[in-house]
Length: 192
Image (cartoon, rainbow, N blue to C red):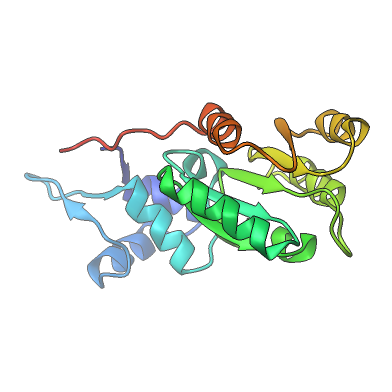
């Protein structure tokens, strides 16, 4: 179980140490006191949950730790639901966005570890979303799997622009799950 000190949290949130202690004392941030001197500690997952609840950015190094969240961006609702169902059955958490613009805004809020991305969408294309992911410091660490019915040349362009993997539609379920688990291995929760 990885924990953070109140000083660690104060530095990450750019607030005073007393502010963090008040968050813990009033129950907004779940923490515990160490025996002896009574110093506060907060589990990393409780801190990340606190940040999500208060719409605060999650530092990339914490966002990547044991993150099982996948954002599915596809304008075909049936395909998005299918991908979500497959990945939830494998133990991942999923959210869907039905266009590139919605996907971009959800990405910042949801902080996924991985995105599945269709290339051909109305308005903001998959290429635009991929460019946004790779050029934004808060999202550049996110793994991207492009899932598209476009030709091999288009899929190669997606690779060249930063996709970690590409799959053709219609995709094979086993290939999808294998690709996701390679890029985003599920970590076993340590039982304390």
